[in-house]
Amino acid sequence: MSWLAWRQHRGQLTVAALALAALSILLLVSGIHIAAVYRAALATCRPSNSCDNLGPQVFAGDGFFFDAVNLTLAAPLLIGMFWGAPLVAGEIDQSTHKLIWTQTVTRRQWLTAKVTWAVMVAVLWGAALAALVTWWSGPENAIDYTRFYPGQFDLQGLVPVAYCLFAVALGITAGTVLRRTIPALAATVAAFVGVRLLLTEFVRKHLIPPVSEAVPVGGHLSQLRQNVWTLSAHTLVQAGHVVSHPALPRGCRGRAHYSCLSSAGLRQIITYQPGSRYWAFQGIESGIYALLSIGLIGLSFFWISRRDA
Amino acid sequence: MTTTSLAAADAVATWKLSKRFRSFWALRDCSVTVPAGRVSALVGPNGAGKTTLLHLLAGLSSATSGQGLVFGRAPGADSGFLSDIGFLAQEIPLYRRFSCADHITMGRRLNPRWDGDLARARIRSLGIPLDKQVGRLSGGQRAQVALALALAKRPRLLLLDEPVAALDPLARRDFLTALAEAVADGGLTVMLSSHLVSDLDRVCDHLILLAASEVQLCGGIAEILGSHKVLTVPHEDTSAVGRRHEIIRTARDARLATLLVRTSGPIRDPAWEIRDAGLEEVVLAYMGRAAAPLSVAEVAR
Image (cartoon, rainbow over all chains, first blue to last red; front, side, top):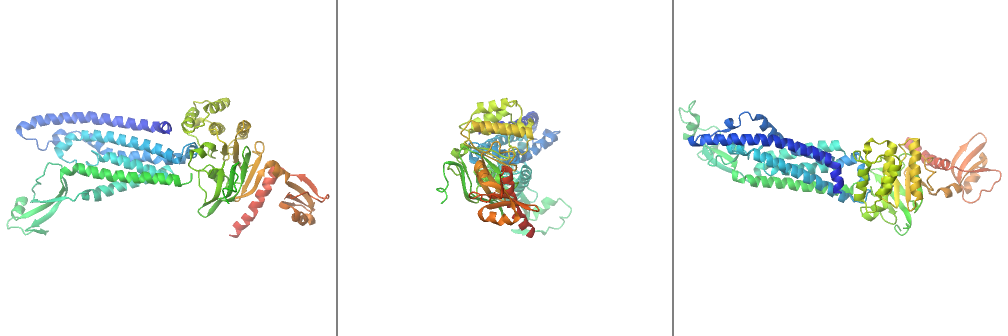
């Protein structure tokens, strides 16, 4: 069976390998360049202790590479569409499932081989890309402390691999249930984008209850520069009560606003996820996607043995 | 009542096998037997349930009710059953980007009794290059390759779903010749479907006639021909014939009625003109009989 899977998908595999190779060259070349610039900048600023805000200096002219890296956000979806969805639906489109299912191999064995193959490639491909992007983002993480923020979080570490796994599982299942490649493609896109948005926008911030800290208005968190993910920084508190129109001391209008508000006893409540939770969040979110993927693959197996050809 | 009444010696035995798709019965109460070693023509108009029956026997779909056995075994996901059958679907599915050689390798890896030399010899003898992509072959060549692959699996029962429907007359003849040769090698039972009986009587010795999702006829072709006669009688004798024999089809002109009958015993009246029926004539008569009440019912609905 694995020979068949290889023979059937070697074309796709070549395309995927070439795409990964092209991306690798792009990221390696630009990443080495950015790292060198960053090291040089550090060497210059350290003696004078002026290493704040190195971003504009280090990343000048790198907009194209940042765009390219941000576009890898779509890579799992492409894997779901072009690896996952046609895996079973493509066979049914061509009726070749009737050829294979009447060889001396059960549907279950057939699907096991195909799924193993597709999932393995998707995960390895995703892991290679995630490792590259994580390495590439090193200087950016060190300068901007943004790796916990949505957008950055989704590109680095463990979660991109989990997204790839989920996308391919979603594609396989959509193809098995819908039995046609094009509807399966559409369903994969809709479901993947839907689930990703839902989890990123509404679920992720609650995975572990956030921490709140009262700081002077315009002030900073005590954990500043530790990759915190700030969720909100809007609530004003005066004398222990939330206020929307604080009573301001006379003569405050139009002057140095922040210090004025602070002297009135106003505090800002900042709600955030501490940077120390970064890997916990990566792990939990990856786990959620892994469980969803297992459920989807299970559904495929259930469906394929139940349905008529 | 089910398993025991179906003889395991038969290559195919079904008992009240039925398949329903939502509210539509694709096959209803189909009880047929095909003895081992026969080449059975599964004949019927489009939509009669031929593909449904073949899919059920190949284990590609599961029955709504009733039972079907292939060499005493229910079609399903076990390798014993799967290695016994060869199936060629109507679409003649092959991997278009694979060469014939790739398909032969695939067969070797998926089947325990694979005879790759046989497939190679067959395909070469047809002048088809082994390394050519299957997608670039003609329809007739693809059908021949698919047949060679199905035979190389060394099945005991070969199920062919309208294998010649899409072929031109020459390719059709070549395909049936190849099939006849394979059958002559022995050890093979074949069921092949078609909506045209004229294609099949050269290679088949058994007939199953499906029409309107039900079995109209099932048996050896020689027996079927032996028990059907065409009588030409005066109009007033029609009912006399009908009392002794089953009238399948009646055609009338001004003076005489031409009856195709299924005989039960000898035909008495020397005044009646009797002749043997042709297979196509018998098949068309049964198809016409099955279609007529249905179309009336459809109109009434």
